[in-house]
Amino acid sequence: MKKSIIFAGVALAALLFTGCPKAQKNRDYILATGGTGGTYYPFGGAIANIWNTKIENMNVTAQATGASAENLRLINKGEAEFGTVQNDVMDYAYNGTDMFAGEKLSNVMTIGTMYPEVVQIAASKASGIKSVADFKGKRISVGDAGSGVEFNAKQILEGYGLTFDDIKKSNLSFKESAEGIQNGTLDACFITAGVPNSALQELAFTAGLVLIPVDGEAADRICSKYNFYTKTKIPGGYYKGAENPVPALSIKATLAVSSKLDEETVYLMTKTLFENLEELGNAHAKGKEVSAESAIKGVSVPFHPGALKYYKEIGLIKD
Image (cartoon, rainbow, N blue to C red; front, side, top):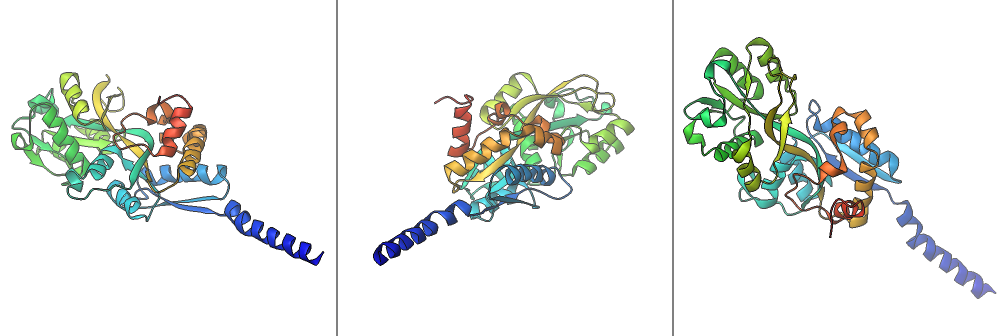
């Protein structure tokens, strides 16, 4: 009898030791976002809140960071599990090219693309510019040196048979670029951002602007070579005087994940996110632009197996 009691006690202790702690274990993760004044931080916070309230024992903290490049390095080093990043910067990191030349980050994978960030090309009315092909010899700002915008500009110029050597290049911030067009020291600029962009709104209101399209064979060439681009249109009415839609290319804000996270956890988090998009849209305006159908577009870095499992389950990706 005593032996039976002892055996039962040992068995119960073993069950408690092997079963309960695992079931009750908190999952603590970091979601690297961006600066507190930008879009990535509140948007990432809205995603984290969905995960934390819908998944048992989930604790995801949205952390303010320097955005895409830093987030990818944090994930690669194991200092964050998730990150909001631009899909073009993610492509450079994964392949060790452009701003990540010689620095290949192999521990990052994709959950899905979230919403578009449009490459907006604005010119002064006085410049006479109608197409990117007209940029030769013109004074063009291509964003801060080494920024994602600068690489967008390089790639789009390439689609029209031009290089930086063909233009009078300046590396200026969005605000400085708009001011340069306004005061006549610039002819045009590249701005990669959500629509509308405040610097361009102010320019349109004070001095006017012309939005330059990216379309036709040039757009096809760019998208074929750089498959992180997607075709889009800048809707009419967002900028004073620009009443008609303008063809453009966009990169996409993307949810990146560590390749070291297990398949079932990432599957659950992917499923939970896309089954609660109404809540995401209510929490942040950009959430209204997110869908599972669009999340598989503009992806050039492999999906995490857990995310892939979800997209296959709902029929968006076939075996």
